[in-house]
Length: 512
Image (cartoon, helix red, strand yellow):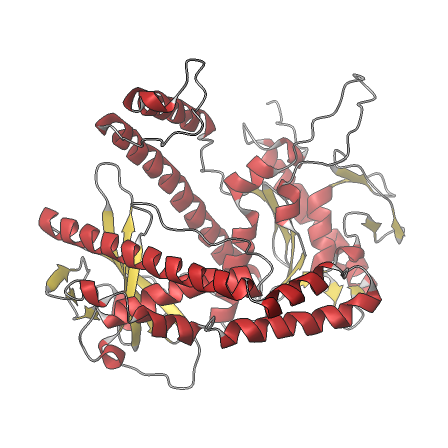
């Protein structure tokens, strides 16, 4: 196998497993043991953390931090110093990746016949450390959680070269793990798989995904190096050839507008993802009725949960069947969304090799509005809901992350996330003026009377961003505007023939 020393490039190859029922049961049992080990280590580390937090030194630092304010410039230097002291104290107490791996040796040996050192130390302990690292040392973590029954869906172990040949290993036609031989479903004439398997295998992950009637099992190989290029089996041509030139992207909660030298279009993100909210609510209501019927002592006469008593959590067969149906429904939606995002990212890469997009904070867009406003038309209070459901269904942030990863694997420049101070939605390159528009205004009226779709025009402006000027290239905008108008009109004509599309596009269906 090809080994790429000194390179941090990593790629994945996921292969389905062809298992019998007894093999699936053995794997499910091992995942349950891995979950128990995970929770045991989590409990031990939380206990250790509480001991550190109760120490006088830690309490002193926390009190000093609470007395300071990040918004005041004078308080920022002492706050940084206090955070460094706190992090140093935590790392001294063993809150580091190596410390968690060292602690794991006390908890996995009881399960050594099924879970070995490679899976426990390098897999499970690393997962627990990731949760603590996010909570203690990063901004996006607030709390760590124990894994519920059935919540752990993957385990991983290093390849034979690192684990001494005693853990999860790839053997060409099967995966070996502690006496289990798990055959792979492989196509011998698949050139892509053959080329990928020539690379050095860093570690192997056993992955479980929900199916309609039974779980599906996969082996995910993490390989060293860049991913192989996919080619047509007959002609041998590259399926997704790389384009050249800048591409401007204007992304919203449900749509993406892009503009390149040869193409401009406005597309709905993941249009095949069905709105499953109605079906989900039906299943959840059935599950609630089943849960109440199986645990009558948990509820008072008025239907509320009893307080001060130990609740029971019996799950009937009907409840488990509904739970699996809901899981499969959500899994199908997620897989469809991910597949469509990958297809769109591959298409964008055929248009150019340099991408410009305005930076968006998707989390803030999902929150309800804080300000209470009265509608001028109805005189009633406006709804405070924003874009939470659209972002959950369409996942625009996932598309950008996929595009970033593909650019990195192709050796392209990073996707340039530009500041919103550019105001691409307000600028007009013909008048050179900025005009603030309401969110409902989806069209720009140019000086010559031409109506241009707002998102497409923003993508055209971002396409002509100049990094040296840190602004739009006015000369290039004026030169290439006529060609953009032609591409714009073609896109609008195509969209006008679509029966149903998001209202945020502002395009009505043409009546023939």
